[in-house]
Structures are given as structure tokens and as C-alpha cells.
Image (cartoon, rainbow, N blue to C red; front, side, top):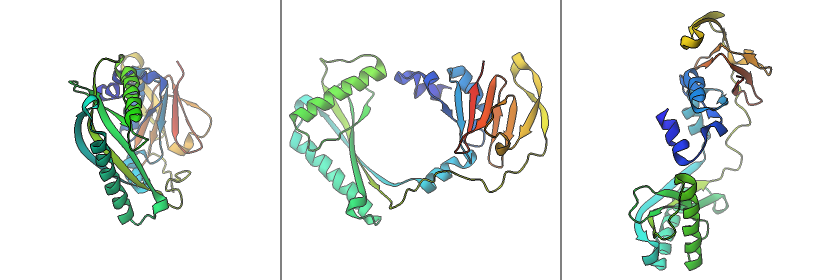
Length: 258
């Protein structure tokens, strides 16, 4: 719960505006409880959720991240030195992608930087789309940081100097065909050993005789919780007051109804 808050409400984002994505063998077991605590009304459990990291590794684009520390305040910055540092990182990232066998037209390089106010502990990452930097580009970057800082922390300090913390160049290789499939189809959907069993849903609901179903039994018509969806690699618990259905990508879509 603290981890979810750290990447949402503590960064100025209302978690109730976003669905929760549950993965891992037990992610679907706890996700409705967490969604209720956060105020989120929608949950997605992708196919092969228990193998989510492995699936991501198989389908991810080739990527190399080249980073260097660069503690320099904007008001004392040597633009030539800064651009030279970015150029070195860009060349390194492109060289790594080229070593992977990607032709020049298939290489994608994106630059970014971590920025903070001088004397501040926390840095924010921001894209640096226009290189080489000039005085105008540096001013645009300072303004983009102020906007991002206000959105994240609720204020901006226009009188404070901004400084670089680190520079980054990310090199990606673009494949000839998309690496991510349109959908993931499971070869088999083994029925669970029990059609129903008692499950405890807290002091408010107590023990409830709960249907136990495979993923594909959900179909495209919402089914009311409580439900337990058992699969080879994961388990999903649909609490009372929620419904579950399948979308066109075989995601379990769980939505709150009360």
C-alpha cells in the first residue's frame, strides 16, 4: 500500500483515476483489497499474469541506457561541455544498438536528464528533445522542470537555480515487425479441482461459499463477485461488490459496483 501511494498520491496523482494492473502469482489475490483502499474502481489482470515479467522480457524492444553523473547548475553551465557530454552518451548508445545488428534507420536515441533545485535532495527526470542545447533550450528545460515540480510537489520556486544531476541517452532498436502480439492465447484452460469453496472476506462479509472458475469461464458478460479465478500460474479473487469479465485481449476486467 505504501509503495502504491509512493508512485501515485505522493506524486500528485489521484489513484482513484487509474485502474490497477495486477500481476504475479498472488497479485490478483490482493488487488481488490488494495483498489478499495485506494479508491480505484477498476482492475486489470492480464493473461499469464504469473509469468508477466518473463512475457515482458520476451516481447521487450532492445534497449541500452547510458547514464553519467553531471552536477552542474544552469546559471553556471558551460553549454559546450554539456552538449559534448550528451553527444558522448548518444554515440555510446547508438554504438551499442548498432552492435546488436540494427541498421541506422532502425536506431532510436532519446535523451533525458535528472534535474532538481540547487540544495534539493529529490531529482525529477525530464526528456531533453532538442539537442544541442542553447540558451533558449536551457530556459525551456528550466520551465518544463518548474511545471513538472509543481505538478509533483505542489509548488515551483522561480527564484531558485535549477541544476543537472545526471544525463541519460537511451538507445532502442526498432524491429521490422512489432514484437508485441495483438493478443496472448492460452493453449489450455484447466478447470479448477473444486467448483466452489468457502472463503473468508473479512468481518463485514464473513465466510461465503464462493464459485471457483477458470479464466475463460468469465466470458464477456459481467459476473458478480465473490469469485475465485484459478489458473496454473496465478489466482484472482473477485471480492463482493465487484464484477469480473474478459475483454478482447483476455484481460480479466474487475469493476466495483457499490
